[in-house]
Image (cartoon, rainbow, N blue to C red; front, side):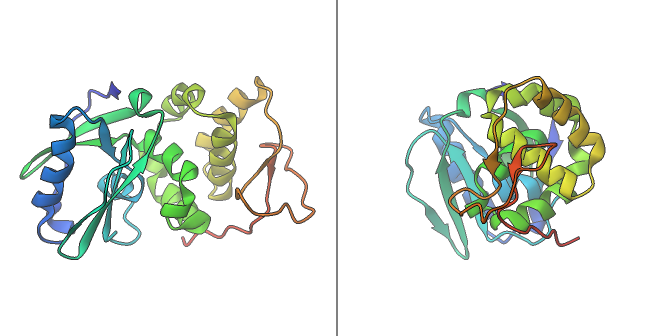
Length: 211
């Protein structure tokens, strides 16, 4: 993993009680040598994009791991084969520290796992709220670590929520690659829609961010 040097402090008061137990559970993975980081809607909330308080604590790791229930909160573990190349930062809390995906890492993760992030409408909403924390240079730096369709879908959604300063550099980077038309929503038919010119994304689902 790539550790970013900027430390963060996160007040756990916005989360339900017993969060210290959740942190202990995920920190145990590191103790046993299992790489992990808090990601998706959990990471987005930690970075300030908390459209709704998530009741699920989402963690990416490199192997199948059984979910854990603590009071009303569930810890979900999702598998990532790129976890060793992820950009993470250490976040300090009142009860210790935890490993969290950077805002840019979180943005890519959201488009890679839309089904567990509330689907595309919610992904677009969270990206809009996360935008002020995103660095366009870091988005480009991370892009080669993902498949081109991930960057295409991310750029398309950033355009959708009017984040030109983030989308434009990503579009310029993609223009130098051989990107092919991809479906916006994987697993859904194209519905005779054509790919847009800028991202080569086929908009087979109407996405509306809740802004």
